Length: 166
Image (cartoon, rainbow, N blue to C red; front, top):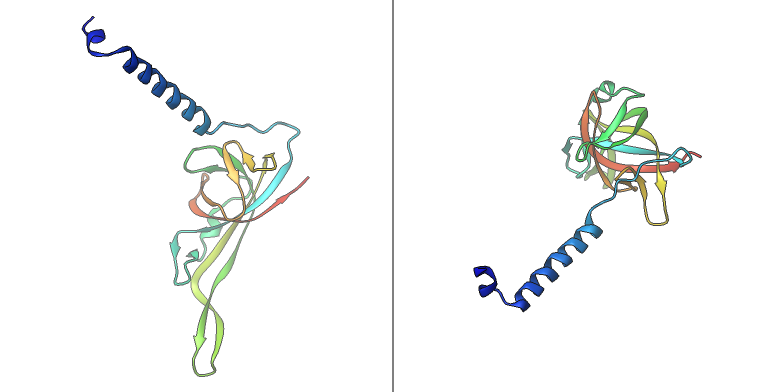
Protein backbone atom coordinates (compact mmCIF):
# COMPACT_ATOMS: atom_id res chain seq x y z
CA UNK A 1 0.00 0.00 0.00
CA UNK A 2 2.99 2.24 0.46
CA UNK A 3 3.45 2.32 -3.30
CA UNK A 4 0.20 4.18 -3.79
CA UNK A 5 1.13 6.74 -1.14
CA UNK A 6 4.25 7.61 -3.16
CA UNK A 7 2.69 7.54 -6.67
CA UNK A 8 -0.16 9.78 -7.63
CA UNK A 9 -2.87 8.92 -10.12
CA UNK A 10 -1.20 11.15 -12.74
CA UNK A 11 2.07 9.23 -12.32
CA UNK A 12 0.30 5.93 -12.92
CA UNK A 13 -1.39 7.34 -16.04
CA UNK A 14 2.00 8.51 -17.36
CA UNK A 15 3.52 5.07 -16.74
CA UNK A 16 0.67 3.34 -18.59
CA UNK A 17 0.99 5.82 -21.46
CA UNK A 18 4.77 5.25 -21.75
CA UNK A 19 4.35 1.46 -21.71
CA UNK A 20 1.66 1.71 -24.42
CA UNK A 21 3.86 3.92 -26.60
CA UNK A 22 6.82 1.54 -26.27
CA UNK A 23 4.56 -1.39 -27.21
CA UNK A 24 3.23 0.44 -30.30
CA UNK A 25 6.76 1.45 -31.36
CA UNK A 26 7.95 -2.16 -31.06
CA UNK A 27 5.04 -3.42 -33.16
CA UNK A 28 6.00 -1.14 -36.04
CA UNK A 29 9.78 -1.59 -35.79
CA UNK A 30 10.11 -5.38 -35.47
CA UNK A 31 10.56 -6.94 -38.93
CA UNK A 32 7.96 -9.46 -39.91
CA UNK A 33 8.96 -12.93 -41.08
CA UNK A 34 7.47 -13.39 -44.54
CA UNK A 35 7.77 -16.83 -46.06
CA UNK A 36 7.60 -17.48 -49.78
CA UNK A 37 4.51 -19.20 -51.15
CA UNK A 38 4.38 -21.66 -54.05
CA UNK A 39 3.06 -19.05 -56.51
CA UNK A 40 5.64 -16.40 -55.67
CA UNK A 41 7.97 -15.22 -58.43
CA UNK A 42 11.54 -16.44 -58.63
CA UNK A 43 14.32 -13.86 -58.66
CA UNK A 44 18.00 -14.24 -59.45
CA UNK A 45 20.48 -11.85 -57.88
CA UNK A 46 24.27 -11.56 -57.94
CA UNK A 47 26.46 -10.83 -54.91
CA UNK A 48 29.99 -9.49 -55.40
CA UNK A 49 31.99 -11.04 -52.55
CA UNK A 50 35.14 -9.81 -50.87
CA UNK A 51 37.09 -9.88 -47.62
CA UNK A 52 39.36 -6.83 -47.74
CA UNK A 53 39.55 -3.42 -49.39
CA UNK A 54 42.07 -2.34 -52.02
CA UNK A 55 43.08 1.20 -52.94
CA UNK A 56 39.88 1.81 -54.92
CA UNK A 57 37.73 0.90 -51.89
CA UNK A 58 36.32 -2.15 -53.71
CA UNK A 59 36.14 -5.54 -52.06
CA UNK A 60 38.47 -8.18 -53.47
CA UNK A 61 39.58 -11.65 -52.44
CA UNK A 62 42.51 -13.94 -53.13
CA UNK A 63 42.65 -15.94 -56.33
CA UNK A 64 41.05 -19.39 -56.17
CA UNK A 65 38.51 -18.61 -53.42
CA UNK A 66 35.58 -19.16 -55.81
CA UNK A 67 36.55 -22.85 -56.14
CA UNK A 68 35.33 -23.40 -52.53
CA UNK A 69 31.77 -22.33 -53.39
CA UNK A 70 29.52 -25.18 -54.56
CA UNK A 71 26.66 -24.66 -57.01
CA UNK A 72 23.38 -26.03 -55.61
CA UNK A 73 24.18 -25.29 -51.96
CA UNK A 74 21.73 -23.23 -49.92
CA UNK A 75 22.93 -19.79 -48.89
CA UNK A 76 22.01 -18.04 -45.64
CA UNK A 77 22.01 -14.49 -44.29
CA UNK A 78 24.92 -14.61 -41.84
CA UNK A 79 23.34 -12.05 -39.48
CA UNK A 80 19.90 -13.61 -39.03
CA UNK A 81 20.35 -17.19 -40.21
CA UNK A 82 17.48 -16.89 -42.73
CA UNK A 83 17.87 -18.96 -45.88
CA UNK A 84 18.03 -16.53 -48.80
CA UNK A 85 18.24 -18.87 -51.77
CA UNK A 86 20.25 -21.46 -53.64
CA UNK A 87 23.55 -20.86 -55.41
CA UNK A 88 23.08 -21.34 -59.16
CA UNK A 89 26.38 -19.98 -60.51
CA UNK A 90 29.80 -18.81 -59.31
CA UNK A 91 32.36 -16.95 -61.38
CA UNK A 92 35.39 -14.78 -60.81
CA UNK A 93 37.05 -11.94 -62.66
CA UNK A 94 40.57 -10.64 -62.12
CA UNK A 95 40.98 -7.46 -60.13
CA UNK A 96 41.71 -4.49 -62.36
CA UNK A 97 42.91 -1.15 -61.02
CA UNK A 98 43.26 2.18 -62.72
CA UNK A 99 46.63 3.92 -62.52
CA UNK A 100 47.71 7.23 -63.98
CA UNK A 101 50.57 6.99 -66.49
CA UNK A 102 52.39 10.30 -66.07
CA UNK A 103 54.72 9.74 -69.02
CA UNK A 104 51.84 9.47 -71.52
CA UNK A 105 49.33 11.50 -69.47
CA UNK A 106 46.63 8.78 -69.59
CA UNK A 107 44.89 6.41 -67.19
CA UNK A 108 45.62 2.71 -67.72
CA UNK A 109 43.83 -0.37 -66.40
CA UNK A 110 45.99 -3.20 -65.14
CA UNK A 111 45.27 -6.58 -63.56
CA UNK A 112 46.55 -7.29 -60.05
CA UNK A 113 48.06 -10.76 -59.75
CA UNK A 114 46.61 -12.98 -57.04
CA UNK A 115 43.42 -10.98 -56.44
CA UNK A 116 39.98 -11.31 -57.99
CA UNK A 117 36.34 -10.37 -57.67
CA UNK A 118 34.02 -13.32 -56.92
CA UNK A 119 30.39 -13.25 -58.00
CA UNK A 120 27.77 -15.61 -56.54
CA UNK A 121 24.48 -15.89 -58.42
CA UNK A 122 21.59 -16.83 -56.11
CA UNK A 123 18.05 -17.89 -57.03
CA UNK A 124 15.10 -17.71 -54.62
CA UNK A 125 11.34 -17.28 -54.37
CA UNK A 126 10.54 -13.75 -53.23
CA UNK A 127 7.71 -11.54 -52.08
CA UNK A 128 7.75 -8.57 -54.48
CA UNK A 129 5.93 -5.35 -53.68
CA UNK A 130 6.13 -1.76 -54.90
CA UNK A 131 8.31 -0.93 -51.91
CA UNK A 132 10.77 -3.85 -51.63
CA UNK A 133 11.65 -7.41 -52.55
CA UNK A 134 11.77 -9.83 -49.61
CA UNK A 135 13.17 -13.31 -49.18
CA UNK A 136 11.93 -14.16 -45.72
CA UNK A 137 12.96 -11.11 -43.71
CA UNK A 138 15.95 -10.37 -46.00
CA UNK A 139 15.40 -7.34 -48.22
CA UNK A 140 17.03 -7.67 -51.65
CA UNK A 141 17.98 -4.58 -53.66
CA UNK A 142 20.91 -3.62 -55.87
CA UNK A 143 23.58 -1.83 -53.85
CA UNK A 144 22.60 -3.42 -50.55
CA UNK A 145 25.35 -5.04 -48.48
CA UNK A 146 24.89 -8.74 -47.83
CA UNK A 147 26.61 -10.91 -45.22
CA UNK A 148 26.24 -14.50 -46.45
CA UNK A 149 27.37 -17.99 -45.61
CA UNK A 150 26.93 -21.53 -46.81
CA UNK A 151 28.41 -24.84 -45.83
CA UNK A 152 31.71 -24.08 -47.58
CA UNK A 153 32.30 -20.34 -47.23
CA UNK A 154 31.31 -17.11 -45.52
CA UNK A 155 31.73 -13.63 -46.89
CA UNK A 156 30.39 -10.14 -47.32
CA UNK A 157 29.69 -8.12 -50.39
CA UNK A 158 27.19 -6.07 -52.32
CA UNK A 159 24.24 -7.11 -54.46
CA UNK A 160 25.24 -5.91 -57.94
CA UNK A 161 22.46 -7.33 -60.14
CA UNK A 162 18.90 -8.57 -59.76
CA UNK A 163 16.39 -9.95 -62.22
CA UNK A 164 13.02 -11.65 -62.18
CA UNK A 165 13.15 -15.14 -63.66
CA UNK A 166 9.42 -15.73 -64.19
